[in-house]
Image 1 (cartoon, one colour):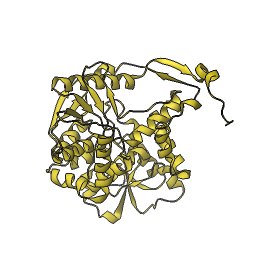
Image 2 (tube, one colour):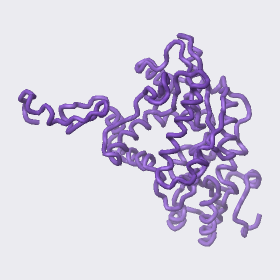
Image 3 (spheres, helix red, strand yellow):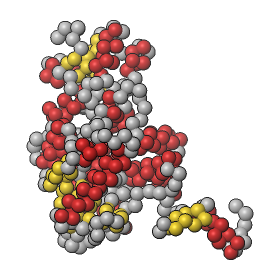
Image 4 (cartoon, helix red, strand yellow):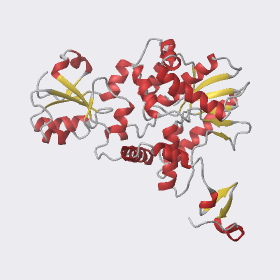
Length: 388
């Protein structure tokens, strides 16, 4: 390999001694924590690191993002600064294609949930807590476990399998995957991970991504609505009376804060909802009490890699954008909560509990069944009380 070359392949890296190079993930922090190449370091602003003298000119620095769109120009700039830098050809996506799990590890992965103390308590224990507390699963249910291919929904599928193995009462599961127009890599990872984890998926295809590709305003909102509708319809066709989604505790508190900061209202994800458009159908969220950090720990313990963003149009935004800004209000909110946690470790619990104990006597107004009420409605009929 000559110094003039800028890209390097996985095969070429395999010929190098590990001490001769460092893999550097230059994506944003959210993407890095979602999944990365083993042994990789996270240096988002690597040019600044070079200017600060943190990069040895005698060492080889192999940069990667998701597909190589960001890492190549960064490697070129580092070369101009005298740093021996490379850009991984194909990025993290190339590594995922090469290392997609092929062998069946279903028993091993399920045992990690039901036998390892941390995961048994924080994953399976909290899963069953939500199921019992909110009465999410009942005898005779036929549940469509909706799998997007990410870590959350794939874990949910294994938790449901573990719950079924407890044999408390009979219910049925359908592991439903909707392909709205996935790219080749996403489809490959979903199918290979499902096979490795022993999840018998039922895949059906739609053209949702094509349908929303030309929508300029709120395409994500329309896409989400369409995907939910297709899932309900397919689940109903398969004889299911419920669909299960993999939203977890962190999703819930992010939704609460997003509603307040950008929606001007107090609302959250409920653990279950009756469908308004599909009679007899119900949506359940059994991972309601599970923390995302515990899902990541389970993923890493088992050496699993899942897709991050399923969208065909934005799957490079969080991994290959160059301005460093969050790609969505949800990511922005996630980072805000993380910063608040540094000074208040109970901030997540406080946000969650804020919607569990709303005191209607202390709010300006509220809405119930479409009817708006304000504190003025019965202000003069209230009993006198101490100033507060």
